[in-house]
Length: 372
Ligand SMILES: *Cc1c(COP(=O)(O)O)cnc(C)c1O
Image (tube, rainbow, N blue to C red; front, side, top):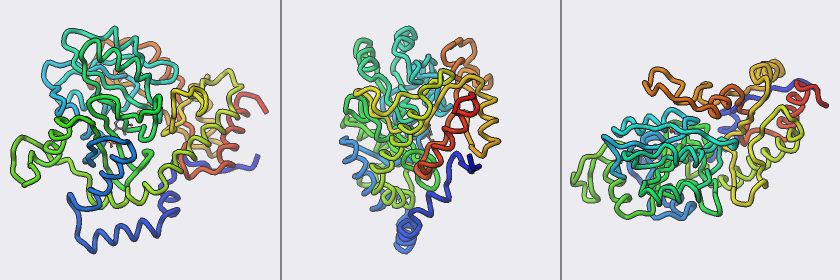
């Protein structure tokens, strides 16, 4: 095999692929001096509403802020417990802490999504909400999560930062519960050129509270009617996202195709646990924000790939949320999640990859395990 360089993500290639359209959009915003709560943001919010089929969508500062104001809008705060998987970005748990509540961490299953049995076992008299994390472009078993929430009268706030466009039984990640949130961080499925996030809901009261919370508690007349914060997606970023939205459906299809190629190339290797394939289960429509495998001799495999020019990442810095001593969450034992963090590896997964890149990565992995 001829040596290749396969970066984990390629910001430059992503920009160059649409350089003219993106530059034109940015210059246009600047010529108009249209920066905060302007037309491009309104257009983006409309696109997001239409794409997801929801009643309310707000572009906000970032995915973390989206979670904080979603929890606040749902009335979650001091004394409340919110159940969240430990296999997630620290931001999911941090948003609960910053809203004044207590994150209660639970296990994931083999597909790396929140374990409904773990949720059930973690419910106490103080539990007020469940925060499923729609990780890696997959949606959790939302039938089970919604059933548990219904039985115990819990709110569901979905962290769909990694799952815009993912579906479970035809329904989009982020649209099941009281509110759902997305991140437009540059490397996310729909990425802007800085920080950005979104929050959506179908509930009128939630929609009203979110509108106030993201803009200093000001109503449509500009009158302050409640406490709020500053959490507004920049109009410039919204204009960039409007350009990116044009190819979004095709981008997601490309990710599914790349995942199918990885699956075809690697599924016979007993040393690996692969994500479910795109056509594995009609209930799930996964969009592969990430391709997160579990691998025997993971660290050696990572080094082997590095040596052959393939850059991989261990998600979230290689630690589950309960494994950060500085957060004072101590005392958890989550064996499935801990096993995952000894074995997990993200292979390159993005729309800048060519078929030949994926074939090369597959070849390197097969070589490592002594297969042709
Ligand atoms: C990216 C991410 C967030 C936070 O989004 P930001 O826009 O970076 O604040 C939250 N949860 C998960 C699972 C994420 O991947």
